[in-house]
Structure formats: C-alpha cells, structure tokens
Image 1 (cartoon, one colour):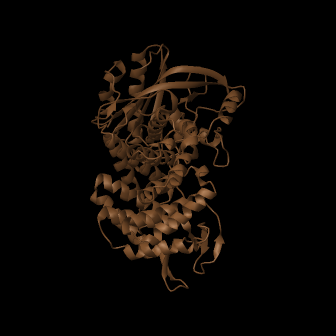
Image 2 (image 1 turned 30 degrees about the horizontal axis):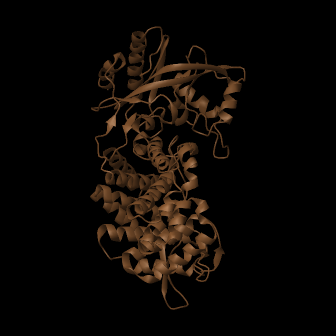
Image 3 (image 1 turned 135 degrees about the vertical axis):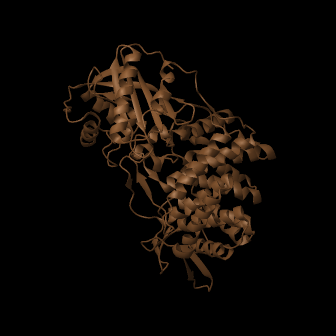
Length: 559
C-alpha cells in the first residue's frame, strides 16, 4: 500500500449485491476525520436506500494530476472505450469526484459502439451526478474547466470473508490482487462462469443473447450457432465441476438444439444430412461444426451414444458444403433449398468444420471424416490459412497429428502462432480466444518435445518467451471477470457477478464470449494440473492498517 500525504480523499462504496453501489467520498486534513465523516455518510445512504449491505469497498487517492477538460478530451480520444483507468474530480478540491468504477458502471465515458474511443457522455454524466450529489450541482463542460485525474488504491470487504487489497496501477487497476493463478482459483472461476451461463438458459430452453450491464439492458436477437457453442463450453465446465445442476441445464440446451434447431434433409444421394438452421433460414457451416463439437463432447463426457446418428448426419451436412476436389468449404446455404447463399462469410468456419470432423473421427473412427479433414488441410496449407491465427485450427491439428503425424501439419501449427506472440503479449484487451490459441499451441509444443519429432520446427519458437506470454495472457483474463468489487457499480450486480465481460464494448456480457473465456481457462487449468503446480490460492492480504481496523464496524452495523 502506498503512503498517502494529506489532504486525504477517501471513498466508501457499499452494496447489498442487488442494486448499484451507493458511493460517498470526503476530503480531510487527517485520516481519522475523513473516516468518521464517511462512516456517518454511508450509514445515512444505506438507510435511505433500505439496503442490507454485504459488500464494502474503500478507495483512497494516491495521486492527483490536474488538467483541463479540453486536454481530457484529447486523452479520451486516444483511449479505447472502457480503458480510462483513473477516477475523475471536476474541481481542484475534489468535492465532485468519481471513482473509475463509477465512470464505467454508469457509461459516463462511453458514447456508443460507433465511436472507437472513450468519450465524455454528457447525458449519463449529468444523470449519475444528480443521483450522487443531488440537484445542487450544476455541471458545465467548458473546455477551460479544470479537472483532476485520480489514481487510487483500495480494499474490498465481503461479509464473513477476509478483506482483499485492490490493485492501484496498470491493467489490473481496481480489482483484487492475485499473486498466484492456481488450479483452485481457476476452478472457482470456471464454476462461477458456467453457473452464470446456466442461468442464461430461459424456460424455453434458449439462451439469452447477453446483456449490457451498465443499465441491465438485454442484447436483442438469438443466434443458434452461439447456442451450440455455449452448450459445448458448459459440457467442458461440467467435466471440471461434475455439477448435477449444470448437467440438467446442458441436457435442456441439447434437447432444444437437437429437437428444434437442427433439421434433417434427404440429399439427392439418398443419404440424410442434418443442418443447424438459423431463424432467418440460413445454414452456416460454423453452426453445423459447433453443433457437432457439442454433441461429440457430450457423448465423450457422459459415455453415451444417444446422438450417434445425428452426429453422422451433421458430418454429412458438412460434407455437402465441401468441394471434394479442392477441399474448400462454402459457408452459407439457404434452407431448405440448400442453394449456396454465401461462398465465404467467416474464415473461422473452416477450422471449426475441420475440428468438428476430426473430433468425430476420434470418437467413431469412420475414415470418411478423416479423409474430409485431410482435404480441408490441403486447402488450408495452399491458402496460407495460418495467417488467421485461429485457435481452432491449432486444436484441429493437435487431433489430426495423432493419426497423421506429418511434418507439414506440424509446420502449419507452428506458423499459426509463432509470429503472433508479440500481439498476444501486448494486446490490451482480454480477447479470450488468444489464450485458447496459446493453449492449443502449447499442446503441440509439448507433443513435439516429448516425442522427439521434427525438432527443427521447435527451433522456430523462442520457448522461454512463449511460456512467459502464455502465463501473462492467462493472468490478463482475470481483468475480464466480474469480481464483486467491480460488479457492485453496475445496475444489477447479483446477475453479473462471476461472469466475464468485454470491456471496450461497454462491459458487454454475451453468452458466446463468456464461453470463450471458459474454454481458455479450462485448458489452462489442465495445463497447470499437468505441471503439478497445485498451490493454495494466494491473495495478497497485508496486515491490517488503520484503514482496515474500522471495517467490521461499518459492514455489520449499517443494516
């Protein structure tokens, strides 16, 4: 914890997990005065909100940087949405001041998806300022107005748990300090996020698409492809938790997938093929691929053959969409005519299709699927598909080389990530697919190393740097997790705690993005367990200070 010189600026934020946090702050020449003032203020706020609090967050300002509103606009224009990592005071005395988390939770620096940088949202600013300070504050946004950027450190307290210190700098700003991302902690995150996904399954058996949590607004529309991918991630998570409640949700989701969303058609050859059909009557290659992946994973995890015929029909649907001479896939068909609607749509569909087929081959050993995969790989090699750095291509190659350990396949796998490490290391966003790319790459590296195969390919990779980047990327995913100390500033904290968000999209919670976080962390957990690095989770809890000694009095005497 940094030493802080007077005057002290101190914030208390308190929530019952069901409503947005009430925040109060004060400035004082000595810490005790600041604490006493805020204790009285927060008691009053809790009484007015009729709140039974369970979360208390304490933040103190460690550094101030004065500037003008005009200069702040320039700073924001060069900052990704959601990535302004400072609090903000609208006056030199910090009488009107906000934490970074208040700014984010109320979309005060977000002007919509059409603007690719942070920007001051005057309407949201005025609305929250009125809630926080009342009608007596008049806001003007003149360029010459002086404002103060605030750096803070903090402490978060949850009922009946040890307080945790909050990071005060860098990409981890504002969330708890984690010194050891171990298997126990990752398992907890997996269980929490998969439970969140389970809660997104409606009574009809369809998933909510997602939420914009600042104001608890639902993302409109349904995507059947995402339904399949979410089911797959939940099955992966069930293999970790063995939670019977999660299994029940999975089976409901698969029942809708197989009974309502997938349709069968008799082809001119006389064979029956199956296709995942979207609500707009489109058949997407990726939909078939992800449905196949989900059903194979379920069959493996549960040891059942109930979907064997349907999986074969889905594979035949993928075969219908492949040019058997070139190996190329077409991406979108019209249903029920099966006419080509779009030859190309998403490059990821190609590797998803190949991965689905090779996973099915691993399950049923039908050489028909292996032949299709090899044809697809010849096309991928010819078109240098490694330039997409798609993690599912790496997953596919790891499966394929179990049966066809050819150098050209390993070379494709190495190229898929080797020149991408700089981007993976320095990417500011959490971008969960990057961890999946690193985990699939690690499996290939480990296999080549243990089998003594094609060692010259390993020479193309700086292995020390690779493993550094892998660990850094896994740690960075924690910055996309809704810890309670972050969720408490949004409209419906209880709904979103334990899920994963996309910061630069207004902290968007979309089901298919949550499942990407899940899949990456599940793979990383497997890696940690393989390395036998099972140490107790370590959250940095320094000895209590003057600040921490007063916490229990606030937490348990405000109800």
